[in-house]
Structures are given as C-alpha cells and as structure tokens.
Length: 211
Image (cartoon, rainbow, N blue to C red; front, side, top):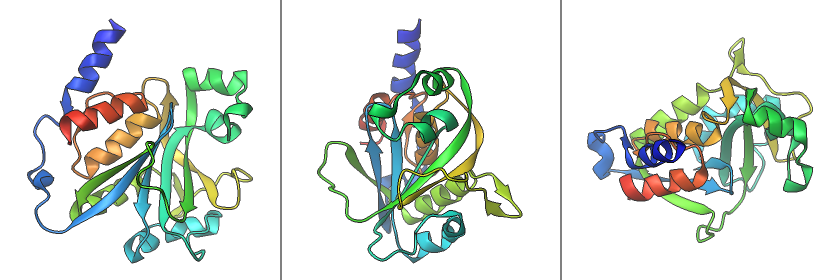
C-alpha cells in the first residue's frame, strides 16, 4: 500500500493544471534546490529584494548583511532533529524518534557565498519574477512572529552563518521538510508530485512535471 501511495504521490502532478506562467514568458529568475539524502533546502540568490524581504531575520542572528553573501538558504524541519543534529555523527535516538513521530517545527536559515552549480546535490530551477515574489511571501508566512518579528530560537545555530527560527506547523515523517519545500516550489509556479516525502521523490517529480 505504501509503495502505491509513494508512486501516486510522485507521478500525480500538483497542481493538476499548471499555471499559465509555467512557459516562463517574460523575465525569469533562478533559484536552487539543495538536497542531501533526507532533506532539501531552497537557495535564493541574494539581491536587494531578498535583502529587504528577510531583513527582519538579522536581529535574530542571521548575518544577511555580511559582505560576500550570495545566497540565502532556507529549510523547514522538526525542531529536535534539526537543531540537535548538525552532522551525521550527531544522530541520537530521541531526536530521531521525534522526527519519526511528531515534533514542533523550526526554520533553519543560513547564508552562503558561491555555490557549485554543477554539484550533483544542486538543482537549478527557472521561475518567473512574479513566481519568486510569491515564493518569498509564502516563505515569510512560514515564520511564527511576535509583534511582527520572527522568533529566533535562542542559542540554536550550527555556526556563525546561520540561525533557527520558530516555524508554523507540526513536523512528522509524512508531512516533513521535503513536503514543505515542494509547497514553496508550487507557490512559485513549479509543479511537483502530489506527495514527495523524500528528496529523491521530489527530484523525480520535478523531472516528470517541471522539466
């Protein structure tokens, strides 16, 4: 049964009818999909629009205004596993258990310089400028806010170039980081599979439905 659901989730496009803009007429923008074996992130090239849209993350510890920043990288995930597992060597039973059941969610946001666009973990995606604006709006809507400002998770970071923020929604193994990524891509006019809980399924669905 699970195999059938996975197959249908990948093969069935969402939305069923693509946006009229999917032909990419007019000005286009490029974003990146970054993947590892279990997780995906979205990387937005940093320009004035992105700096302005995410300027409210700077007080929470994100060095978006640091010289040399070229990309803003954003991912959504389970609070315990995401924060407590910066590397594979940090995997522990309790965060894994929470990731396989239900956990609160967080957004991990980092900045980066140049990214190797030919690396096998990087996929370039072309979208319209309007699609990118919609995606930015949807990503901003994923943050929990207090007095209009995103809420940073105190003391939670992998290094000096990232920060964690409280996020909307509960995390579980069926509706996890990769389904959030897919939803953000769809907000930009990119068709994905209907349900893509793993990076490999999301990537395959993009091959099938986005090109």
